[in-house]
Image 1: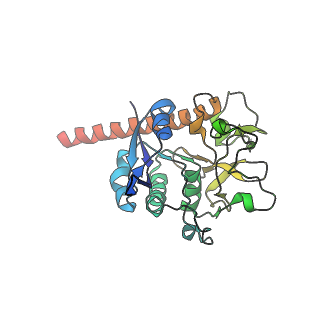
Image 2 (image 1 turned 45 degrees about the vertical axis):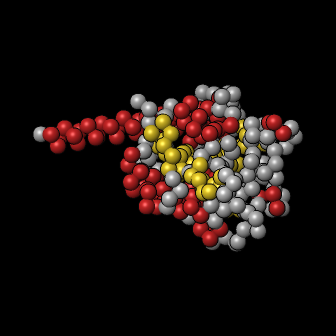
Image 3 (image 1 turned 30 degrees about the vertical axis):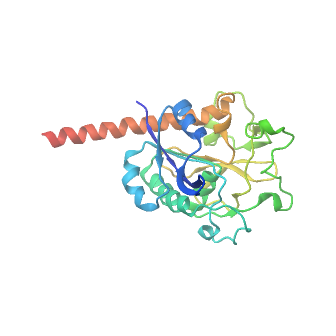
Length: 268
């Protein structure tokens, strides 16, 4: 059966009148219907009131990247520079959704902004402009790439923790823990990792590029790069979504089985 994968929306202005719309990039729809093997369910950016109604109906949660940045007040950070895009409607939805999903054991996979949200939800902090910090790479601008390849081109390598969750997901594939090439399209990044967020991947400048949630009852993994852009060509990207999909399918089977058992008991 195809698991139901919740994808939290961003709030974006569309049209001549800049009407607020709840939106998700088509890349995430396609990746859920592709290697995840699920059915996408868009979660509106409507605040924590939607969490308890929607969460029990989901089999997985995919936290997406976005142009907007997590509001600094949520991690006691300094105000953003003027013009930095924020999305308070998304923040007010995703942070309680993440906490509830982890408490329930729902499979969760976080990408870019989603990885940052995961860290903030668990009590961590963010660097707002990595490229402005001494000794750090410019993660917002891919290195030595022509424009058509900005999204899929590999900007730098990441070092991956041997024996960690990422390594287990990629077990049996051709890769090296010392150098997994990834794309890079972000300004913000994890600064202080939350107590439960265990880093498992690092850029050459030390930026945390991936991690898992310690003690999670289910699949709970995040990466700072964008595997949704190149999963059709990159086996490592595809395997991330396949592993998430496997966990979500297992959850779906259990959820449907529990519902069937409950219905049978009610009919007795």
